[in-house]
Length: 192
Image 1 (cartoon, rainbow, N blue to C red):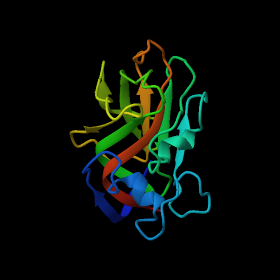
Image 2: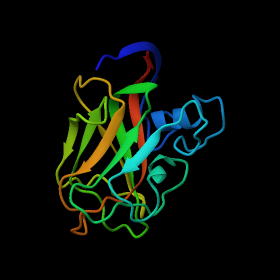
Image 3: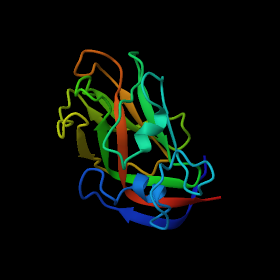
């Protein structure tokens, strides 16, 4: 697959969990030119992106992109190989440096512990960007815990980012409860 890069849309640096300096926030405000709108909910927006997940239990996939709320009950079914994915659309790719997650269960249970962050340009071939084994980073504030992780190395730019569960959550189940993601790094606009 050939991809040309046209303009550098911007460097989006992490400062704190769910700040106003990440990719999701930038796209949800059309790069600061409009009031915040979930970038997955407005199909007419020039900065629309898509959230998907392996299955639907509580909530909807777009809950992952609604970063201005404090959290909501949202999760996949209790199934092996559960995942959540963000598609930045055919317009953008990101050289990722950090990512933030928000737990998606209102009682503080079933926290994701074992997963890998993956990136893709085409949504079919995935590259592992970071592995987490018995990770206990999601711990404050109760119940919609948040945490941020750095992504090291020159891994390339990706259009898709996927959280893929590789083991059981804190309740011994396979569902993934998430109600927020933020991505940081160098966002570029893709040329045709």
